[in-house]
Image 1 (cartoon, rainbow, N blue to C red):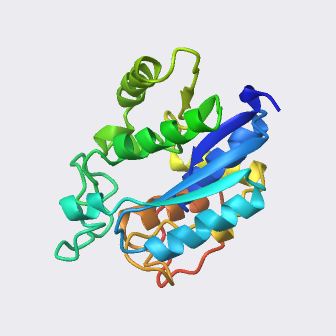
Image 2: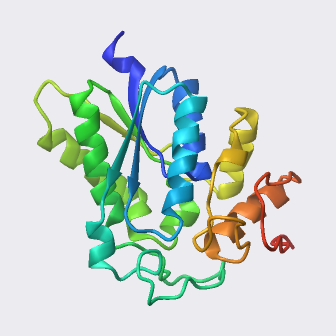
Image 3: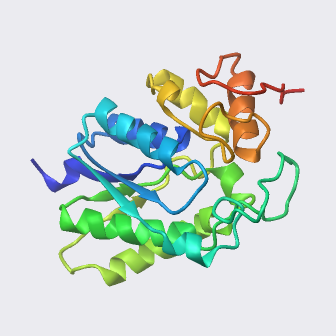
Length: 232
C-alpha cells in the first residue's frame, strides 16, 4: 500500500459526492476513507444511510460518521433551523439561498484533512460544482485554492494532501453524465432538502438533480412526490 493510493472522500449521501468517490477510484485511488457528518439537517438519517451504502458499494477502507451539531446550534440556515422554511426552487436566482450553512465546507474540509493526515492519505475529494458556487460562497474555486494553502501550511512538513474538487467547473448534468458512465448507484443517493421519503421534487436540490437527469433523457431512480419538468 502506498500513500498515493489513499484518499478521503467527503460523503454527504448525495449524488455529487457519490460520483466523486467513483471518480477517485477511476483516478487510481483504490483505498477510500469516507467521512460523513450529520449537522442537524432535516434529512440527516436518510443521508447517513446513503453515505453508508456508498461506503459498501466502493468497499471503503473505512467509514467515519461524525456529529457536527455546532452547525445546527449556530443556525441561520433553512437546512438546520426548523423556524426557517426550505424555499421552492429558483434556479435563476443570483442570491445566496437560505439553505446556505455558514462556512460549512471549511468545517467539513478541516475534519477531512485531519482524517486524511491521520491515515496517510494523499488527497481529499469533495463533490462541489459550478451550480453550487453560483449560490454558495464556500463552493467557489477561489475558496478551494485558498483552503489548499491552509492545508499546505497547517499540516506536518512531510504531509502532502491535495484538495480535489474534480467537478468544480462542471454542471450537475455533467456530473450525472459522468456518474452514469461510472455506474454510480444513484438509487442509493439522496438530495432532497425537505424530506427523507419521498423526495419533494420542488426544492433547489431536487430541481437541479431532476433537471440533470432530464437533460440526459435518463430517469432518476429515487422516488419523488412530484417530478416537474425542469427542461425547456
